[in-house]
Length: 358
Image (cartoon, rainbow, N blue to C red; front, top):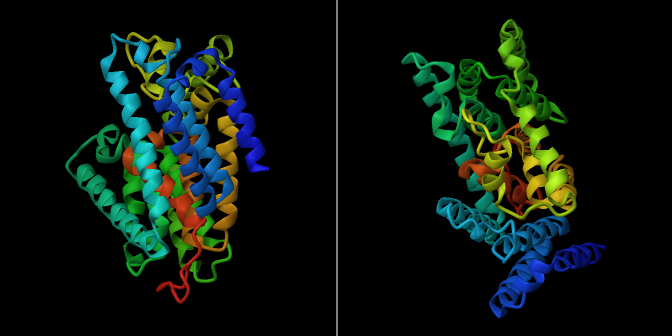
């Protein structure tokens, strides 16, 4: 079945006249062959859906650099966007190959690193709050406050299930300092997801109560529920795509930063990103891309269901992706790939989790 889907996707890809012109190059054919081989290895190492997602993303990246009207290379007056598209394609492949070569114990080290990031990010936000920084300028090291707080929620499960779980109040306090609704909601979801099938999670009830109290206080300000222009942005992007591009296959990998500012055409605030991974994937990879990545997410959550930390982190990363841009930030993108790799990687024989929670 996966092979049939991949073949169908390839036929759609080849049906484009510009794509056919590009594939006349022997180097493009060689590179495509390497990418398809890597896709096969991804499918064998993790899950067939992961291999399919890698194949579709990288093949659409090849199309971007072909001779077509939407090609990054055709925008000769925007050199920075050319390098951005190149960086996106190369970084995606390099990160994916890293996890292809990783082993179970390597991923355990990533868990520890995530717990450390959770604590350090939280301490930075608390420090900035103490120094009088306004909420819009807190946690800028990992993106805007919403992205920094969401990263706390994603990495928090690895702190809670680590020997350092006693530091859990630190990220909780940091999230409350951000005055942003998505990180607070994701942190609450994190605790809820940890509690499922976890007999030792009763101590999280107190944290959940504090979260609910904080959320009740935050709802006094209408700006908490403001979309910050996101919904209007999504509507404009999808409307433009329906009229000017393909809904089935999208405009090509990495072209979000090329088209989003152009589509919005704003004179003041310009979003460089779509602020939603669903909308970004729809724009770049079309309905096929959305279906493929949704399949990866569903199978990954299912595979990690009996491991509380990975399950909670995955749910939070998916939640963050609905209204933010984690794939455009290096650490957030790395965590997303790491979580998928963890979900589909069984524990090594004889390995015992120190906490007993996951």
